[in-house]
Length: 467
Image (cartoon, rainbow, N blue to C red):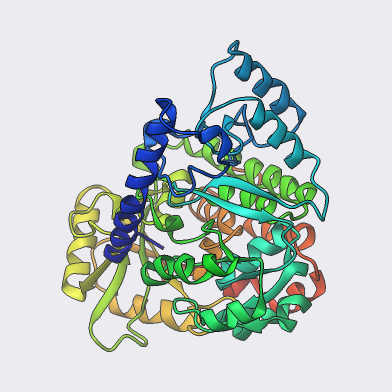
């Protein structure tokens, strides 16, 4: 779950597109064009960090003038005052993204708020590449991929719009939802069959997983035939940022932009915020010396025959979660782990463990992050046992954990933090990761009985103790 070298190519490609858009925007702001008569003129512009909307907001949709988590009548009042000049304009005030804030934006916002299931209007937003993009309403059908795409569609009440999924959903997760089961496949996650997507006439394609090549190709292939491509991923750091992640932002925007069940979406957000704030508050009370040192592996000696193992490092999504949960994320401190993914031989792993032990962390929580869970490709019992055998003679005391990769790649990611807390600091919070797991099923899935029969908590999170 990380930013790859290839992803830098994507960002660079997007930046090239942005040069033209930024130049056009500058001309309009200097009175050199008729931007007010050209809705959507800023589409393709990349927003610089200094011009970001309020970073506490999860709804980076143009029209959200007061930059909170809602688009409602309050935004109309605020925007009217911005047009009058009595309130300073925000980034998201330019509802029709024509390059200026005026009465046309107020009118456009009212149309968005009052939209029905048949209202035709383009809604503009900032995607996870920080680029201005659009989704055309009404959205009646969607295609998505990977566990993160399906779980997010569930959390936002959108599975009834699913008509296409990737091979991974079709193979592993379609059994959780009748609409996903009926949906046709558009092929591999990282190499979608664009001809099939175009033939389906799907309204919006939402990649559930970031891929450098596919993320560049998909808008080029699909946008010209009227299919919007929406980059609001809920995994892999959203493909962009090293030090932050925006899973909750992506989920809220997923629900709003695709015209999902916003009541359920906000219920999820409330549930998410309660868990996150509870964990972070507890984490602040943990002293540095009491923090559990966490190392995460992504393949195991039980099946990796090359002698090289993937260990998560600096900026990895899971390490962000671990830090929020009051862990000492070794990957953020070791010079041997400078990247999100690091290929290490066993001798180097021994060195990292000795370095951690010598630094005062005499117990290491080793968590193996595998495709278990619903995917079931690698069994945690087998992979963790293999690591325990391989690391039998290392200096620190080893405490072994296991986690299914999909648990950190979706709306379920908050459970990862609860799991760390429950294992390392069992009395720190009044939350239980098992109860939270079933809370998600009960409150944010369409066909609960299918989840209950298919999902075993021990395939998602497991504490093996000191083997």
